[in-house]
Length: 433
Image 1 (cartoon, rainbow, N blue to C red):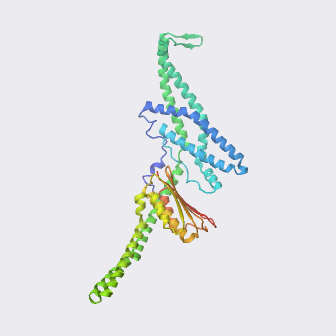
Image 2: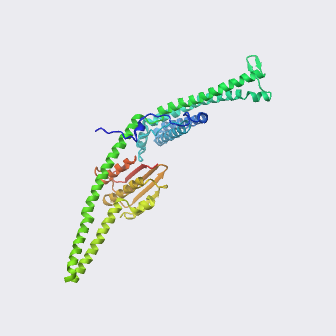
């Protein structure tokens, strides 16, 4: 099946290392100073990157035989990604590049070996590592060239000031020039070198931006894969929405609608009996009253399944404890998701927890459940953990399968680990920036 690329994501497929920013035509002087500041910082940052990463790799590999090296290497891998993100943000801010996040899906939350292999298998990690290792030699070169060029240029431009104070002097071989003519030539040379320094600074910054676009930016294959995943998850989300609509129609037909029909028939019989048999008519009215309450309860349950009011009014910090209170198994809730995510993210997180608690109550034989929700910057993390017998699976067409599609449509990820004997952990990560 051939799928067309949505126009909203088509720009992701075009390599665009530069945008209208500090290195564009507008603000030529100020943009050059931004680039100069960036080049100055390269050397100290390069030294820090080199020391941290070489130490981490050497220590991790050296202690790998004792297994202590595994968490050290994992930490070094995360450090590579963190420093790579810092470099991407710094270059986007100072040089006007459009470097994008190149990483694949988030690494597994359980198992040190799985985390290490997940980080190591991602080519973006190694490209970041190469760029960070090159930062120190690049920093030495850019720092030396930039500082030398600007120092000589500014020194010559300031020749009139030095001449005014009587300290102007130019030594060329065995000749000394300290007169007004020499001062004028030195000033003109300083102006020329200043223009050359501007061009040199911008040229070095552009060369560095090109190298960063090759190593730090997301590759076209990765961007195409993301677009394909989003298109696939969108299709599955639309299918899940259609199935949900059919379920609602079935619930209305089999539940509330049947009760309302029965209510109308009971009221019709009561109307006929009130004139001839008031006692039987009153009994029918009482039955109709009870049927009306049951129909109202069915409608309330259906509405709660659509979108609970407490979630709309107060967010996850109120909705998840209310959800846990209805679970027959003791449930502890730990929620800290301020500021509130978008409504679609909140809804997906709520129904993941609702489905997970329902499965725990039906199948797990657990004695306690822990629900944790955290927002760290632009990532919402939900985890439901129980101490049941384990062995659970995400069944195609089941509740968690539909919620997986819903989460992936929001560029998130749902994973479940449930070994025999437990515990069962449902882990969800959704971007909420």
